[in-house]
View 1 (cartoon, rainbow, N blue to C red):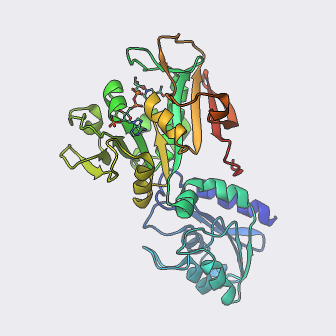
View 2: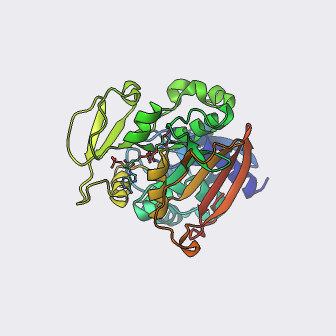
View 3: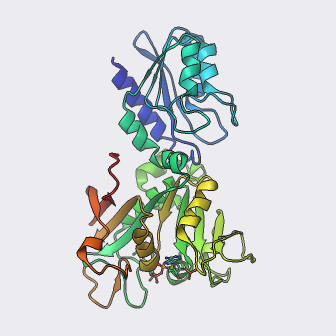
Length: 371
Ligand SMILES: NC(=O)c1ccc[n+]([C@@H]2O[C@H](COP(=O)([O-])OP(=O)(O)OC[C@H]3O[C@@H](n4cnc5c(N)ncnc54)[C@H](OP(=O)(O)O)[C@@H]3O)[C@@H](O)[C@H]2O)c1
């Protein structure tokens, strides 16, 4: 079999960690000798062994003289676990195929260098595009300090996200809501506002029973990590009695001052502005190791994030219904006076999800090719 097939296997393994590894990246590894896979593994959880360590353990003594396939450069530093580059050297592998160099400044070429200095042949770049897409949120934080922002909206065909009364449960179908649960489960954090929390009585949690059946089968309820719920509340409108506070999981309230709320950490956003300065908020979240931020909010926050070019991906679920002109718009962006000023996106994918359409878009300025 070819290098390509083994690397694809390693990428498939890496994806199995997508609900659990945050803030770490997803990584998979396969060890091959005489055209046989003798070891395989993936990184499951921060603080636990890396993919290569699992694969080497399975391969045992047979790893000597074998080829290791890894979807990300093996680490070269002591973090919570010892360097994987050393583990590969100690096991006596003779060749390592790496999909891409790790942009994490703590690694960034040093792992590859260490392997080469030990006389191991290292080939870099096989399936680089797929490996990049697999960890695009982690890589964005490593490169820019900011989380990867996905803005979700559930809308009618005429682009409305709620009735004038604020009623918005449920515009889209069960299948679309299961899809949203899958995205939530993969996010490091969910961003919303006091308005949406109150209006929708939203808990913003991942519920195992609401995930698609295949995911429920593959992952136990206890293995699913709750993303941190990050709620903007600059004017201290939340009382602590909302449904959000009754569900377990971390809550960070973004406020302008310290105060007490149940089960919550208050994060004081320090800018001079009266409301929350969104770029500062994203920087704070990046510093707190939030790789991917899943936004579920109303038209005001959605419009502001778009207007300020802070969205990496727009995910819109269109239900095949019309809510009419009294319903609430999808985004409030008041300063578009001419067509030339309109925020522009390009279509990335369009899929049917149940009875609805899921449209994924990226900002037009973003020319990064990812899948
Ligand atoms: N269909 C869907 O996908 C969906 C999803 C979520 C919500 N909704 C619906 O949306 C409605 C609520 O929408 P909404 O537009 O009234 O509220 P919203 O966008 O959820 O929240 C508005 C709040 O966001 C913060 N915000 C907005 N722009 C900001 C900026 N530029 N800088 C800093 N903070 C900013 C402000 O918080 P502070 O007041 O703390 O400063 C503001 O009061 C509800 O009816 C809900 O059901 C629909």
